[in-house]
Length: 464
Image 1 (cartoon, rainbow, N blue to C red):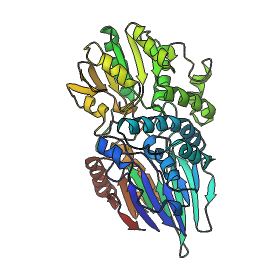
Image 2 (cartoon, helix red, strand yellow):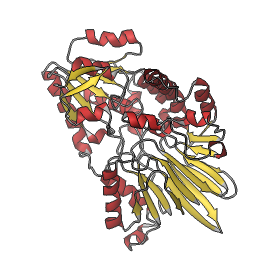
Image 3 (cartoon, rainbow, N blue to C red):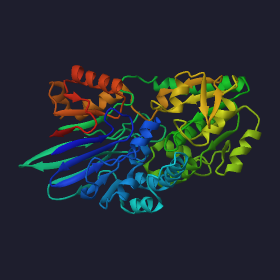
């Protein structure tokens, strides 16, 4: 069994792993590399493996940094089966047209050919085979796969592979991104225990989120401060999961009278489409979310909420007097309608920009979050006088302690054996984080759990 890291190694984005086992060539994730212009150009580089020879692709979840290059994979000759959970398959099909629009626009702006076209996108979507959690997939007589809920976003999956070699079954887990429970929307993580090998993300590998009990108060404070200044609260938000979770949280706060009444806009065509897609999979929600939605007229049909799918409706947000809340994409301010709102509202000290998701190095969101006094948007210099707030506990990513708990669970056979200091993990590969974060998490795993945790380099291979 051989594992090679073609993406996601010492990078937060671009997840792409090749597992060669049981006579099969299996990819897990094929994500877009996001961030600086250099990273954008990396997406154009040829894949580091023979694409037509790949038999299967498993997608852990629907974020673009885990699935955004799937149409390019199709363009380069992949015709195998793509497995994903039922919600992931549906959300990917809804999200890829938006990704294609961005690909085409960026290509035109930089006078390069598009990364892929509509034919590639439609071809890739046709290869998806949706599967429910815990369904056993027998790829051949030596390789079996089961998907578990990773608690990150709707449909996010830990893919657990069982590989038989010389009469011995080896188990390796690919968790994609790991959730940050408890979630307003999702079930808790379905931990995979007692595996031989696992990957683990490390986006927050060197940080601890605020206590979950504090996050609602921090949100209330940010909104209340902006309300008292008669300002505008901007929330760059990822279309998938973060927007939907925030809407449920806001509705709870409005219903209990904790928030002052003000208009809320979701100004993202993709987020609006994804929210509709979520309504098809409400049976995947946790009981609290299902009950909250029953109390309203329909899925996310809140009386205080306005969706603005068209450009004209988006522009009309400017006519609505402050105070108001605008939730818009993209989550890292690397495109989308949030840029227009940032141009308009960042220069005013009455306003607030609130980050509730990870801001990758090199992104506009990261520069604003790190305290830039001026940023460039659409080629114009925009002064930043708005208040800047960050709430890490709203992240869908586990923090360092949560990631360490995932490793601990993966390493245990049973409670008795765990307490005796025994463990199953032969290696833990720390990926999908900046180097400082990955190294910090690997260090804690080694010293506190006795796990052989390593940070692989891009292109590095391991015989397992």
